Structures are given as structure tokens and as C-alpha cells.
Length: 206
Image 1 (tube, rainbow, N blue to C red):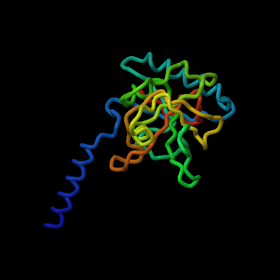
Image 2 (cartoon, rainbow, N blue to C red):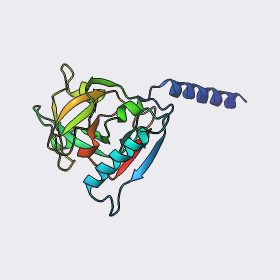
Image 3 (cartoon, helix red, strand yellow):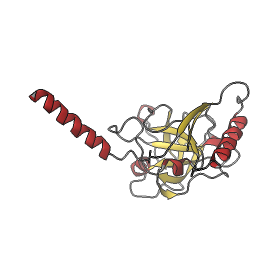
């Protein structure tokens, strides 16, 4: 009986600790569903971009919907896509010591739909298209790590493992979110506008 009580007490304490940990977003009242935009019809990036925009616009008109966003991966669902990168203007480390950041492709209203706070700069807009200069938003962890005494806005990252992504300008900083689990550490995260990173898979958030 004593062993069972001790185990139950430890479990309750762990549960309370998990409940008090901030995941970095607001899950209450959020509905999500995944779309796989593959196949012949959505094979081209232009078609995927147009489809995601149209679906978002239609769902935003539904009663009770305050915001509609989308991302290739949601928090707490695993690490998945990432890239090594260098900071433009700073000495590049050796190849095996280059930093790695998670890559998230998101629509303009994603941060608002998820309740992820904008710390500095701006969010993405409809003007961030495939034809416009490449831009990114980074999380606080990345910003503090590489600009400990300065301002990351206007800084540039070179994403080494992402095709067709030359030097990208940082236009915003958002709060950190848990990628793997509540108790796991935060990771450097790089967000790009969906039209510039049109992944085949997208999760819509209402």
C-alpha cells in the first residue's frame, strides 16, 4: 500500500507540473485537421498555394471562427523538418557544428489562430509571396542565442538545406512553443510564409 501511495503521489505531482508548464500556445477552442495536397491536381506549388488560400478564406466565414491558420507541422507533434543554417555576417562554424533549426511553413493568421505571441516585428501578410523577397520569423530562443545583445530584426539567415532559399531576412520574432513534448526543451525554430515554402502537407487551425 505504501508503494502504491508513493507512486500515486509522484504521478499526481508530475501531472500538476505538466499542467503548470506553458506550451507556448493556447489549445483551448482550437480545431485542427491535416490536408495532404499531393496527386496530380495539386502537384504544382502554385496550385497548392491557391487552394490553401481559398480554403482559409471560406472557413474564416464560418460562424464562430475567429481565425484560420495553417502550418506544415503543429506543436507537440514531433520535430520533423529542419535545416542547418548560418547567420549572415557572422563567422560560419565548421560544417559539423552548424546550428539546426526546425522549419515551419505557416499562413499569415497562424500565430493568431494558435495564440502564439508576436514579440517583435511583424507577422506574415498576403504580400509575402513567391515573387517577393524571402522572409522568415524566428522564435525567441533563436533570436537570443544569435543576437544576445542586439536586435534580430533585419538580420539574415542562410538556410542551407532548403531548396531555393538564399539569404532570408528576419521580419519578426515570436514566442517559443514546445515541439516534442511539454517537458522537452525548446528548439530554435524558423517560420517561413507558406507561399515561399509550399509543403505538400498542411494542418489547418481554426
